[in-house]
Image (cartoon, rainbow, N blue to C red; front, side):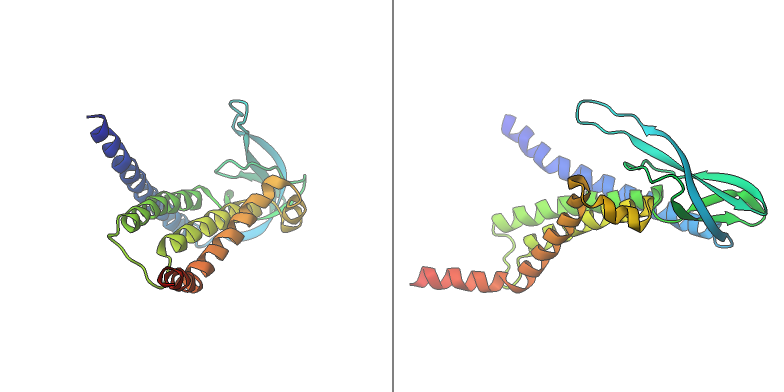
Length: 225
């Protein structure tokens, strides 16, 4: 009985993650399309970081707070503010610039350039759908259902997931701060993690596409000898 429960959990969790990922993708893409349509006639101006408030407070020993970043911008001599709609783990320097898109008929209606909550949902949805597929491919390969002669498909998918995760984190990090501040922050170990993930993912993709076949032939030659 315990074995059946373990099997059900082992199958159910990846399926649940995949379904959640698909739902995230649908809501994220729908929201992003609607946002693009709503802001199609917006004008752009330069905004400047002026303040922040707590988006989510630190919880637990290893938790960290995230912040809603507030930017000020001026239209026809009148100052307005607009904030990010997701939590950022880093706070820009005071006065850091960021492009703002605003409604010329109603300037207080505005959005910030760069990442937003819809894109974050798309990013998370892509990861939630990709990871179960990696486990599925790995399980089918181990069981011998799938056989790959020239390409290490499991390594390829893992590499794509790693590179995608790292690129997504980098995109949202760069979108929160000016590029100069982002480059300066790369000296911090935490900031290096997304870049290392991209490098590792790209290396896995290249290895899986071009070198896995050679390694398989070498192993086969050793077995024959």
